[in-house]
Length: 111
Length: 116
View 1 (tube, chains in turn red, yellow):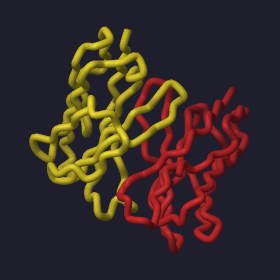
View 2 (cartoon, rainbow over the protein chains, first blue to last red):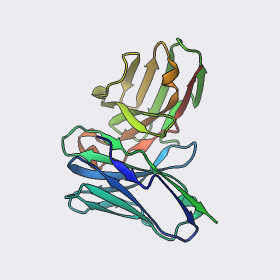
View 3 (cartoon, rainbow over the protein chains, first blue to last red):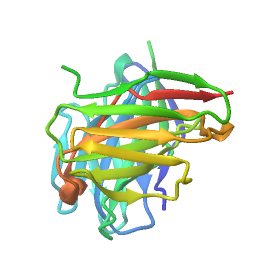
View 4 (cartoon, rainbow over the protein chains, first blue to last red):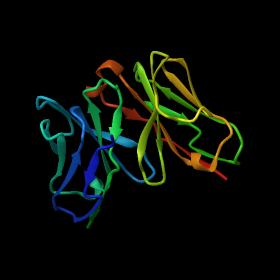
């Protein structure tokens, strides 16, 4: 099942903060976050593993609540370069060896 | 020194034609994927290969046939193209399928397919 992301879209002024949420109905092993700019490929941001280990971006933080099967991405002091569509990808504990991506959250940072 | 490359970048073709998209990665990864991103930006896995072996084959029409001549290359051939095949197709790779839950996937630049 596809994870649900919220909000679908958000508009910020430069310097403001944002939180993007990702929720799954399946038990998860890990959550992956990617950012895609218009006309470009998705770019890896972060992996959150069960047990709390994080791998990824220094300036972006995230959390993973295994029990609730939810993850949140925190974008603080947003910059113009943060604009794009953010996808969470969930990796289930059913050993299906595939990422299932959410429908994306469009973020626009204005000057 | 592009990590994951795809050709062509754009593909415009008529309904009913057959076309191929090529993907190459120079990261030394064992696993490669094909994803389809539709007009609503929904990114959905189609296939994955690990060391030339087909591992994931989602419910994709038989008109789509992946081929992996070696672990650095994964091609996608599409027969009898339909209007609904119009999308962006991304190739991706990761180090190891069996630990893919904690592996970064690196995406190619995408192939924008338009079927007229």
